[in-house]
Length: 220
Ligand code: CA
Image (tube, rainbow, N blue to C red; front, side, top):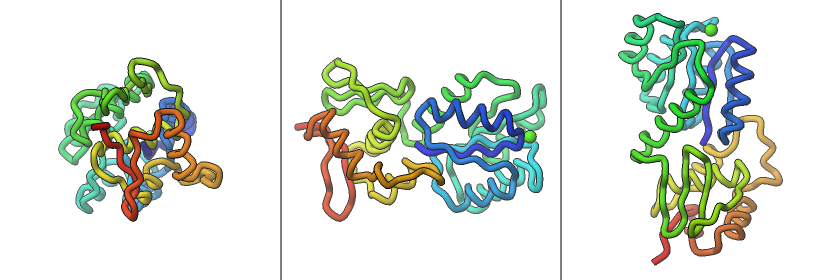
């Protein structure tokens, strides 16, 4: 899953990037509203963390312009402590959730995960595929009850397929949701990651759908 962080406070932005990367997300960051607006208009993010007090263009304007342009990704806004007017205005402008500063990183990660899985129509954090269980909140995978260790990229790819279980997911979609902007993809192409997943999970879960991409299919 790939997220965008729009935050002008360099210290907080670095903390957000680190916490989200540790939670398994590919993270892009923007330090002002204009850059954030552009990235959110042009890149397909699974969720956005948007500060409201931003240079060049304020967060509320960024959010309104995304929504006016039919950009529907989940957006969590960061508001000043105690500013209920910001929360109300933000929610009315199309925000999906908010956190008041200061906040605990664990809460932010949990809220983002919840927004992303609800956007995909999953009420529960756990997605099952036969005897494969994928816990999107804990970022863990178990096969027939036994934990399987995956790298962050392997988990991201599997989670992407799991959100569309039974349907082919195109390589373009996977590429756009797996990697951040400045990630070196050479040794981590989709084919390589799928190969590693098949070795760890067995061949039966991930199908190659010729011309369409990959599909997570429950075994018959
Ligand atoms: Ca700010």
